[in-house]
Picture 1: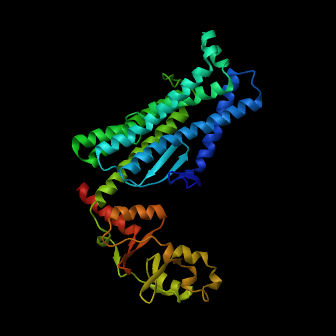
Picture 2 (picture 1 turned 45 degrees about the horizontal axis):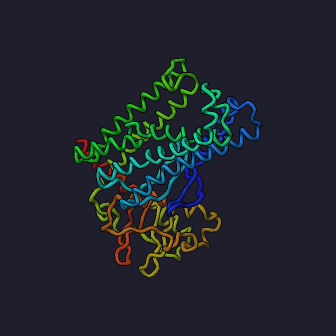
Picture 3 (picture 1 turned 135 degrees about the vertical axis):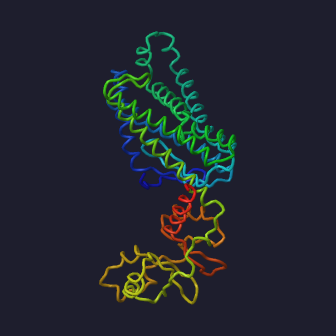
Amino acid sequence: MGKGFKIGSIFGIDIRIDWSWLFIFVLVTWNLAFVFGEYHSDWGTVLRWSTAIMAALLFFASVLAHEISHSLVARAQGLPVRSITLFLFGGVASIEREPTSPRNEFLMALVGPLTSFVIGFILLLVAGAIAGPVLGAMTNPEQVLGGLSPLATLLMWVGSVNIFVGIFNLLPGFPLDGGRIVRSIFWAITDNLRRATRWASGIGSFIAWMMIIGGIAMVFGVSIPFFGSGIGGLWLAFIGWFLNSAATQGYQQVVVQDILEGVTVSRMMRSEPPTVSTQVPVSSLVSDYVMGSDDHAFPVMDDERLTGIVTLEDIRKAPKDTWDRTRVGEIMTPGEDLEVVGPDDDASEALNKLGRRDVRQLPVVSEGRLVGLLRRRDIIRWLQLHSELDMG
């Protein structure tokens, strides 16, 4: 997923839209406009498209509500939630840590499908109340659908699709909500999150491959119950591919957290990293520091006080013909904008900070004094070493 853009915040949680969401929004709207036209031949173009746009917006609002429910339960358990992003396959809440117990995992996973079911049943009840006379006068389902008002059609579709979302998310394939429920059960039985995740991810990969194989079979004319056959199988296969990738990545993340558990920053940081003064010309920084080492970032010091950090990216932003007269202090990232860690901080939390700020290194500060530099590659090297030891 790309970074996309922020559209606001709810309960202090940033709401973001990935660029891929624009594609799926257009696709859903176009498909709904066609379907509504099939059942309501008397609807004009403006009515069909406006109803389709509203239905698509309400659908994604429902997806957002689904993810907000996960996020609120996670925050109630003390888990930080950075943002919620709507993207090609729906939505994802950026919860920074794994749940602390099987019970918390179970509750956090279950609340999402329950939210979808509640929204779905409420909308269907309202749609049924609006369409009561039509439902009582007609027996043919196509006649009933064709006789619904625009509002009843809108609520009927959004309600039905929420029920489907709830059912789909209860499939026992990690990282779907159903897979997380299964993981919570395995976790409670084994008291081992890593093993539970491996088992749940295996089930998730199996379901994903069934979707991929089934989708390809549909393309070649095989009819699958509920899904049918035809070119729509490509979409099913694509979803299966995404779920398989997510299941693998989910297990890898747990392995990383497991390896880093209890490890402090001081055990993998680089002590006494090379530093540079604010008054050093950029040309000297390049020739004396960058070219003579494999370092990509240098803490900037002023009278033994950390005032910032300068990276290769900062150097590239400065025109080369100005390097002789440009000082490091003019291109560095200032200290007030830096994310720092302490030597006794947990390495897994430091890794989260690296990902959250999208940087390659973090200054390590103790009592206001620079004591080291934690680089992303230091963590990767630690993970490579200890994952190999685990395999052995």
